[in-house]
Length: 68
Image (cartoon, rainbow, N blue to C red; front, side, top):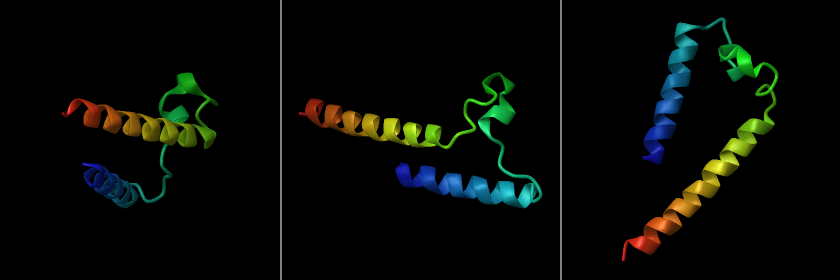
C-alpha cells in the first residue's frame, strides 16, 4: 500500500509537470487563502512526516497487539 502511494505521488508529479510545464507546484497557502503565510515554511512538511511516522508505528503496534 505504501509503495502504491509513492508510485501514485510520482505519477501525479510527472503528470503535473507535463500538463503545466511553466507553473510551479501550488503551495497550500495559494490554494486556500485562509492559511496565507502559515504553510509557506518547510517545517510543516517535517512535522507532518513525523506525525505520520509516529502514527504508523502506533498503528502497527496496536494491530500486532490485537491480532492474537
